[in-house]
Image (cartoon, rainbow, N blue to C red; front, side, top):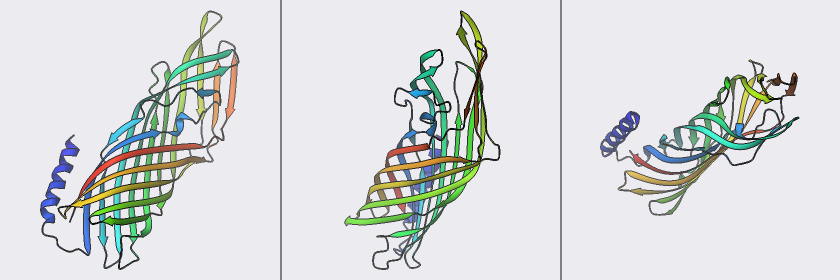
Length: 305
């Protein structure tokens, strides 16, 4: 709440200062979005043992965020800069599943955990057309993605932690099409790739019944600590904007961020041991493709200096 209040004060001060700027060939735009996110992390469908089958859609995977953004345009120099930061977090993700074991099938309501993802973008844009510079602009961007997954399983004792830190590049392609006075359609397509490190820990123990007695059930996973995390994806944004009082702009838009996450040289090995039957199961690294899917709808407001 304090950060939101400070951002609001900063936003108002920019509006007051902006009254002195009358240069239409150079502009600074500061804004904030009110964005409703639906996040489906790859953990929901990436099954480590190949035995757990989801039987319901993911629950509690919505978030309301307030990302800020900045845009600079210099039409004389055909140059622009876009900066934005998106932070989302989902807690207490749950879904129903069936776990098929040699002794039979068991139905569960699974508490998946919490996932946090930060996407930070700095894009440097080239505006090639003098007569209508906003119709097409493209360039090169710097992208940073930090991702953290932790479990909240209250029915067992263990650690399940997966943290990814990556840096990379994007190729932003944008277009602002004027429909009528002060009303635009804004299109953006940003493919990207990032590389970085991964810290992964999975150790779990709980009890299970066998022959009217309780026995420990142990799950352990190992990965190469020097594995390389790769995130390859794209972001699409379609919005409508209306400029009013010459200094303000209102946005309504849709956004989709889709990415595939790979772990290079991970050498992942997964073990399950059940003491009741003295059974040790080994599952090598799966070849399942891991996807993060983020869909959102937003309203935004900005001031233009």
